[in-house]
Image 1 (cartoon, rainbow, N blue to C red):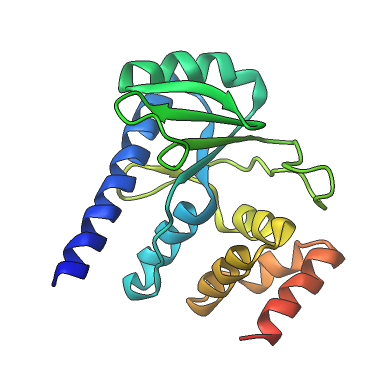
Image 2: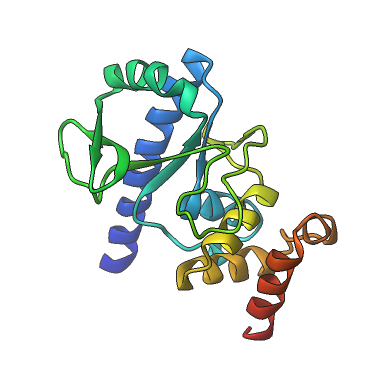
Length: 187
């Protein structure tokens, strides 16, 4: 029972951060979306809550031209902008640690120079919790582009509940389609 209570508290904490951030972004009219593991969690949770895996942080994607407005919009919600260790992030003013931060990447830019594709910028999807998240097609592209172990697991999670449709697969580049096949071969 303690493990369940701890898990639920962690889910509530990360969702609270994402909800506060998303509310500020929406109020300011800034096209920003949650990406990464939390977005995967929320998409999978809608279909099969038992298949959804918790993530430790919040990642967002925004067009760089909105950064100044974004900083101003989320500051009243208790988030402070920082650039540290080559990363842009918003930290909770009450608990300013990188682990509890909201990490920022920029639409249309590569996170790392060696990545195959830049961050896509399709319109966000609004969850039942009021959080703006990247659509599944964008998440699949990003996860196959970064292709770390946790990204492969996120691909497996989305695929296991039927989120990766033939249409999404057909829209991938040859390189990303090959990576998807590689992940599927290891399931």
